[in-house]
Length: 561
Image (cartoon, rainbow, N blue to C red; front, side, top):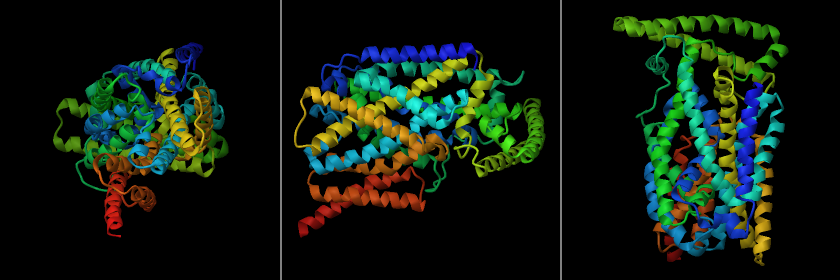
C-alpha cells in the first residue's frame, strides 16, 4: 500500500477506537456495562444487529464465494424475513417483559438452572469458535499487507478489538457499530462501482453480467430439491428460516443487541428492518464477486490470489512453477479472446448456433483454468507453503490491492477492519455476559456485589478474547470462512432453538426430560454432520425438531411410569 493508504487506514481506525473508548469509558455499574442502561433506539438496534452479523468474513469471503461458486449462497438468507416476524411476535415480548440480561435467563424460570447452564454452554462453545474465525478474517489482510506471519496478526487484531470492548461494554459496542456499518456500506458500494469501471474499454455493466451469467455465476435461485445440496431455495427457505430463528432469537450476540433497546417497539422495528435490508445487501456483496469473475475473464488473473503462496512455490519448485505459469498464460489469452468473441456475438445478432458454440468454448477454457488453479493450489499445499488450504478468501483483497485508487484502498481495508471490530466486539461482549450471568453466577453460591460484578464482566471479556485468538490460529484450515462460520452455527443452533420452542409453545413438559432431550439431540446432530448425510442448513431443522419430539415423547413416557 502507498503512504496515503496507510494514513487513511490508520486514521480511520484510530478515530473509531478512540470514539469507542470515549463513549464507554464511564461505566457506573454492571447494568450499564452489560446492557447499556436499556437506552438503544430502533436505528441503533438495526445497525447493531446487522453489524454483528456482517463481520469482516462477509466482506472478504462472500465475494470470493461468488467468484468460485456463484451467487446461490444468497438463498441462505431467504428464510430470514419470516424468522424476524416470528421473533418479533414471540421472543421479544417475553425477553422485554422479564428484563433479562441474556436469552438463557428465561430458561431458568421456565425449566430449571441446569437447563439454563447447559444451553448457555452450547451457545458459548459455538459463538466462541465462530468469533475466533471472525478474528482470523482481517488478520489475512494485515498479513497480506505487512507480509507478517498470520499467527502474529491474529494476536494483533484480537488484541486491538479487545481494548474498547473491555473498557466500554455494551455502550461502546452499540455506538461504534453505527458508524462502522455506515462506513462499510459506503466503501463496499463504491468498490462495486469500481469493479465495473475497471472493465476493459467498451464493456458495459450489461456485458459484465452477461459474461458472469454464461459462466454460471449468477445462479441465484436453484429450485431442485436435494438434501445434500448446500444452497437451493428449499434449504434456504426452510433451513435458513430455522437458522435465522435460532441465531437472531436465541444467540446472545444478537439477543443482546435488541434487549438493550428502550422498549419492545424499538426492538421490533430494528429487527424487522434488518429482515428487509439483509437480502439486498448480501445480494450486492455477492454480485461484486460475480463481477470480479467477469473482469478476470477479460483481464489476466493471477496464478493464485494469495501472492505470497505463489512466490513461495516459485522459490520451492521453480521448474514446476514455470511450467504452470506457461500453461496459465496460454489459457488466459485464450479466455480473453473467447470473451471478446462472446460479447461481439451478443451485440452483432449472431445465430443461436454460433452463440452456443462460443459459450461452450468459453466454458471449456474456464474449466481448464479451474483445473490448473486446483493443480497449483495442490502443489502449494503439498509443500506446506501456506497455512490456508485455498485462496478463496484472498480474491477480493487481490482486486482491492491491484485495482482501487490510492486512498480508497486504505479506506476499504479500514472498513473491513471495522466490520470485524463491530461483529467481534459484540460477540465478545455477549460471551462475557453469558458466561458471567448464566454460568458463573448460577454455579457460585455467593452473588457478587455491583463493584465485583463489573470487574467480573471485564475479566470474562478478557478471557474470551484470549480464547478466540487461540481459535483463530486454527481457522486457516477451514476453507471459505463464510461457509465455515455457518456450518459451525448449524451444528448447535438447531438444538438451542428447539429448547426455546419447547419453552414457548409446550406448556406441560417434564423439566428432567427436556435436559435429556438436549443432550440426545446434540449427539444426534453431530453424528449426522460427520456422516455427511445432508447439507448443513438442514441440521438446524433436525436439531429443533428433535428436541421438541424427544421432549414430548419423553414426557409421555414419564407420565406413564
